[in-house]
Image (cartoon, rainbow, N blue to C red; front, side, top):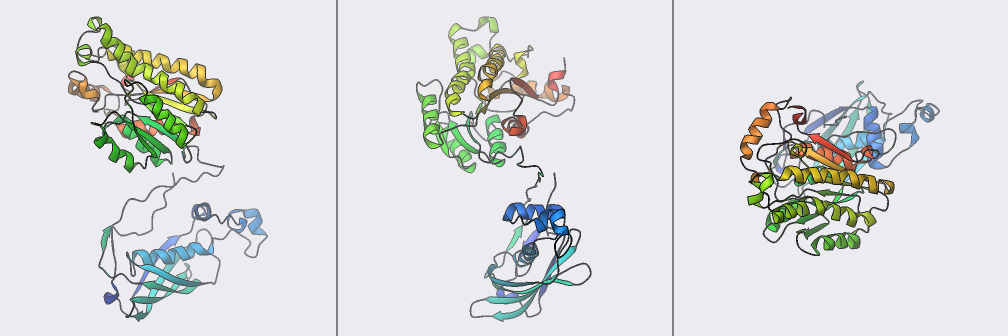
Length: 425
């Protein structure tokens, strides 16, 4: 992955108010132009002039090689004005630029701004602007007019996002334009929340459910933070609630690209007892909430996934091995994993994929119902090959991959994300 940080960016951005400015004050910012910079600028601006991107075309032009966009240099000037002089709080009023020489990949360009005139009546500042190459030659000259900050500001520099350029079309891990349903967020420690955050960060638009009125105050702020298009109640035990969620999705979007089923339940007395002692009612309820609800969601999603889609659920390796204190949820998760395989086979011809993600033990609200769960966590951390347990962010990144076009030919899997716990006896 290629990172594009601001060169020489300070840890703290500080500005200069109008009263602190003097004629001749100056600041600068330097950056070496790369091919990636040119391609990124083209992708963001839409300026795909082949003089900037195609070596064969550029060879026939006036400069006989690829050159950077002129406004890329203008952006360096903007960086100085916005981060150094006058700095944060500056309002750009106008800019004139003269492009003196071409800038090629590998050129080290320094943008310099110098205060030329101060107009006290409106806090207006005129600054001479120059972009100079490594040979000391002007490549851009001009004048900027800005409104200087009124108040003093010192602001920490946030972490910039990384950028990955794909030279053969769209990034397959980019989820922009995809829409999905997330069922199972209880709080910010939920596996479903880790997945929702990763999916939304990759560009997906979400519909998010909460269990009931008691859960809503804990879930709604998280959903709003993820800019969810729909925030709906959904208790799969209540007749009609799940169907209402899909009806709202049909009305809002008319389609669905993915869903995450991350809910499970068993009555405490059945969960904490031996499997052979499980009541018929408790076993049935555990299967209904934890397994059959996934099948119901798959059926409701099917007509909304006319162009294919992805169905995800969450399991645990206690489905295939006896894990102390996991008890009734072992057979339940085994049924869930089998359901995933059958759903994948039945809906595969329609381009609908199904997966079960199998994290190791993670401290979530749901897991707290398992007897002596702290011991399970400690034992697992000691035993896994990498001596580290996965967290909700790790699960989220796997969910992103499975939903993405990069996984379009993968279906019917149970994928562990557990630090290798599934390998140990």
